[in-house]
Each structure stands twice: as C-alpha cells, then as structure tokens.
Image 1: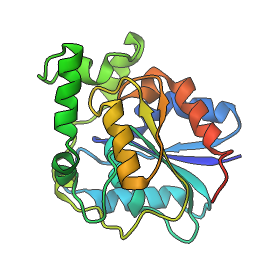
Image 2: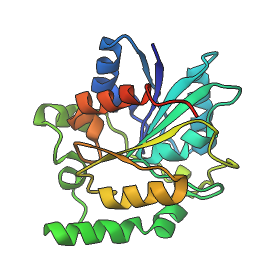
Image 3: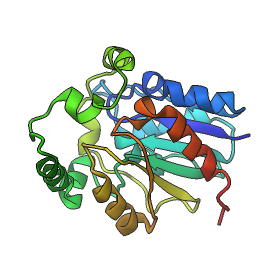
Length: 229
C-alpha cells in the first residue's frame, strides 16, 4: 500500500479540498495525508510550505507527492533521501528553477490561454467564483468548499521556487478536461514543454478532486503500477 501526501493550492485548505479523494484512497487501503498550509498568512511562503510538507512526510520513504494548482510550486522543493518516490501534478503550475508564480503566469501564457478558451466557449473573462472554480462541483459540496477555503496571501506569488531540477522520480501530470482556470490544452502543452511528460485527462474542472473524486483517486492509484524508471 502507498502513502499519498496531498498538497493543496492557493489558500492552503487541504482537508476540505482533498477530503473525498483521501477517503477513496483510504477505502482501498492506502494512507492519504492532506497537508494544511497557512496560505492566508502573509508571514508564510513557499519555503515554509515545503518545510511543513517535509514534516508531514516525516520518516516515510517513497511517498506519492500530489500537488494541486499553486501546490506545483511547493512540490519540487520537498523531500530528499528517498522521501518522495513519485510526484503527481493535478491542474498544477509547473515551475522552472528560480521562477516565481507571478513570473510563471506571464512566461507560460496562461492568461492568454484562458481568454482564448473563454472566447471559444462564449464565457466572460470577468472572474466569477462559481463559473471559474465551482461550475462542476455538486452543490452540496460547494458550501463546504467556500466555508473551508481561505483567501490566499500574496507572499508566495513573489517568491522563487528554489530547486535545481525536478527530482529524479516519475512525474505525472493529471489535467481536468474542463479546467477553466488552466485550460486542458494549455496544461498538456506545458507538461510536454517543461517536463517531457504526456498529461492524463480526468473529468472535471480546476477543482476536479471535489467534483470527480472517484476518478481522480482512481488515476492516482493507477500511477502506482507505472514502472519506476
């Protein structure tokens, strides 16, 4: 059985975001640990997030590190001495060494990709919480997501991702087919360009773990069978 360390996106509310996926993984005998991060506290940023995740890993070795959205900037800063055996990025920002989240947006063209996708779908570019993030999340989960979420502080967005290279472990990219923040075709291209990885599509939008937890958990478990090369 595997241990999954689950990193949240901006705001750091891991328990509420990963709740259903963690339960599904546990139902199959795996250990799933959502890692709460103080993403709303301006005194904390990427180095502290990585340290908190390292603490959650503790003495475990070969864990599956799963990062959502902004969590992609924490993932490559985590682990050492065999602590991380596999990385999965879900609708995640994929940084280059030394890049900040703010630089990432311009360097990758994520804004242009989002505007093009909105135009093709006849959507407005004006931000709307439901239309951008919660459009496919069941209504009974929306309220808990909104109540448990936290407004992200600006601090991590200006901090460089301090790593030399992605860890020499299998890295997988999982993309929500209906992600409206980071459109699927944009994410697929970025995974190829920055990691040389072919992304795997799963149902759902940016918060796919809330809207399609069974499918997300199933894909996570499927990665366990991929050879470690």
